[in-house]
Length: 403
Image 1 (spheres, one colour):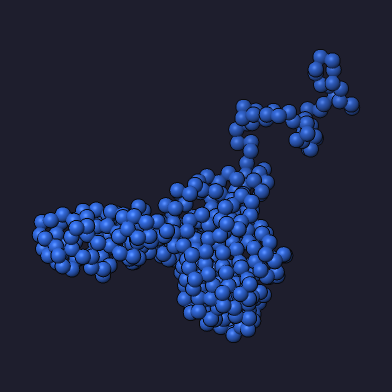
Image 2 (tube, helix red, strand yellow):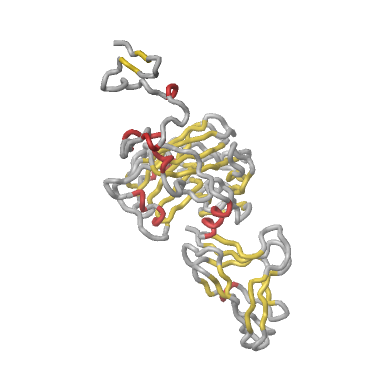
């Protein structure tokens, strides 16, 4: 039977069953035609939502990575390498790790970035390693506290998949490896991505299945490490890439990894790093600079003059008890630290019009504040003194509670 639209606007010839599937599509709906009032209660369920839209309804912060847009750079540029160690520098929360190799590099925040981002992390190779020994290794890492990841349900039958997305510019085409390493249970999973054009910004997404074995510790200690491998000797490449969660076998961790560190002409850039629940990457979650800075200051904070800024910075007033023991004042952190931080002094501090500053050796430190050290000589009992930096640029106290 034909469907007839009558002059009165009524429709005849339509069976009670309604329209066949696919009859009403985007082209036949007027703008704003589907309103909340026209949707029956509970008629839209998760099974009717395409996978591509699922993560767009996640409430709260979806990106588990802090400083994924490489906005925060409290440490400044750092030139390092040449030893088996973890090296911080450049953008906050990120660091380099190297093992056995003598390769060296400069770590910095850089303005070279894809559209929509203002900064990237730059690894500039300054000492190359083109002939790899078996134990050679270099990778760029990010670490999580266990209490940040409890909602991933790791170690249960309901363990959640996560998707990592990022923008990368590598000097080498070919296979690159990103590894998730469970520090609590010594388990790992590695996935490959391919760089198609050298020195060109490319967007990549990788999904990692949930792990039903081994829960993360619910504490402020390091539980997970994400490693962007840059160089790997045969100790890490001679097996079969472990693309499913399992116990650690070094030979299976970075199979196929190209050598990004083989020339002093090489620069590796990374930005827009996002880790989110689910199997689909969504648009990058941009947070304000102030919010991102506060998140970073849980792990590292500068108190005093930043690099390149001159002038005195005053920390507070204390009273001398005698000629050698004026203490304090109490200096509060802007953000409570993850753990009791390590305190260091760059430049000089002194008590105005009073005794000389001793050193950082006498710091009394908590996660929320520090007390200054004792003075040496020249104090007068009962006299108030103000603790200050000297007026030169780059005089500051650092509090480091990184993982």
